[in-house]
Length: 257
Image (cartoon, rainbow, N blue to C red):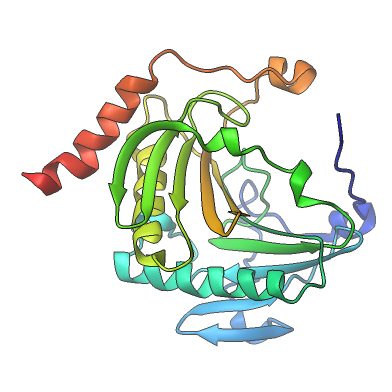
């Protein structure tokens, strides 16, 4: 088994602000005038260097998704969601195409169980110098029960989840249907946060470029199973068909009436 090890600077990590739990802590992303090392601003979206470069042999960047601190993906208009995906994916692909890094991660943390520290909606891009992408995912983790298909984009429910239980996949063939990708990702996040069978306060988005196609994994976050932590056993729930049917009914069947 191959492993991915990456250094973490504890001293920098200790200095990072946190306001997901400690809501009294001021939000640095709301204070736009104080932000440093901004690379691009488009409307109220901002692409900039991460002030806290905690990962060693890496380059960390942030995408501030908008000016509203307490909003999130389910709250966005479809137009803003599509603009956000175009803006973010373009910068992610530019970092990949720079050839400066062996791997370029693109992900989002939301909520107290997501691993994030800031409530203000944002995503992260991380260029890693010395880790190979081939060790970071398995294409089988994107196989699943089809929920919807439109143009070049498919949404499914993972039958071989990466961590376990319910994971929504959105897969785009090629790079030219980002509007539909954005629509499906927004639906997946809205379902997890507002219609899931159990109350969910946290999720992650993970983006992967695999053989020229963009794969997105939408992962609700709860306390992680000890079977996965200790033994790498992914639990697959026996109600995936019911969940897939529920998502279809909520978001897609009504469009075809």
